Image (cartoon, rainbow over all chains, first blue to last red; front, top):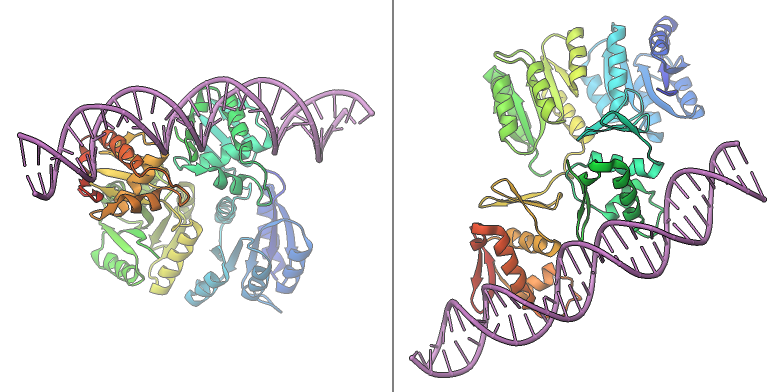
Length: 224
Length: 224
DNA sequence: AATGTTTATGATAATTTTGTGAAGGAGACT
DNA sequence: AGTCTCCTTCACAAAATTATCATAAACATT
């Protein structure tokens, strides 16, 4: 796991410390803030915050206000710490786009489990994401591929392409679609470059290269 | 919203009815099951279930067991209904990949809010398009055709043609119309080329080739 | 049954698409 | 600057599909 930053916001320093401790123990980088205003500032000034854990009850700007402000800037996942499991509150949260609630008191296990679940959902390298099919294992966070447990060296584009194929197993993918998803949107070069990458990918996958099927006049499809 | 199917699993028929009512009111298609075993069966036998809402406490197979079984087959999002907010249970659920919890008793608003949140997360809607008729299944997204669940190899044009026929089931189609819809508008060749494609298509469809009927002096029609 | 028209079929030609190897070029690293 | 890897492009070969045509069969009408 590499340097995932979590912003922890709570006005009670004891609670904040507690949360931070557990997260640090799990290898996350933690940034702290004592209220909504500070949270917002820290979020803006700190690069690549992957997740925010925020208490609802806070002076100056409460958790919902702060979340709403941050939502204007970013879709960063937010977990809300709440004392009461108030229904109205949860609804309010869903509108803003709160990803998860943790009711106090909570156990460290619950905290970590939810954090990893949210990170997994938002595709941050957090809990490692794996895709497997037909003996090909793709470790997204580590950017690594193994075939029958043997390491395979893939270039960046090759990896991205294989990843896209495997995520869309069984789906016919046009070259245009592949370009739009694997290449940046500002790429306007020749679509045939895909062919070349497919060729290389097939070669590197050995026997399993056959899983990448050509759909004549259409594109490609990954299918075991 | 177009025909999103939700599987509701609860042994208490009153609770099940309640949940279903709210979902139906929101325009979802609901499939019901009374226990984990039935849930699994229904999930397997019903196509394109977009979401499962499941009670934890059930006879035969509880919610976690059922979820674990279903997880072996699919990544369909699962929302768990739980009476007690038991910490251990939630942990167990996260391992299996439960997407959300709703604690009983809950309000319809909470229910709907969570359902929509989960569906939004899983990007339902842009999914797979399917046409079926007389044992011929046409998977548009995968560009794949099966007859009685056996794969059939079709070329691009053949696929497009069959697709057009099946979309216009029971409608007599003139050659001109077929040309304008399946071929590009810039095609000004011989309309008799359709005959050849129809021939090939019929051959590849085997017995079911008869579904493509010739309308003498007019064109063709697909009818089961 | 004969005739003219339309459709089915099989073979062949034309076109399109894909596979492949090689080469140029951009960027990273030494 | 030199080397390296990776990405892209190009040209040609290979493969597959699609179109065309000639002929046979089927159909409708008289």
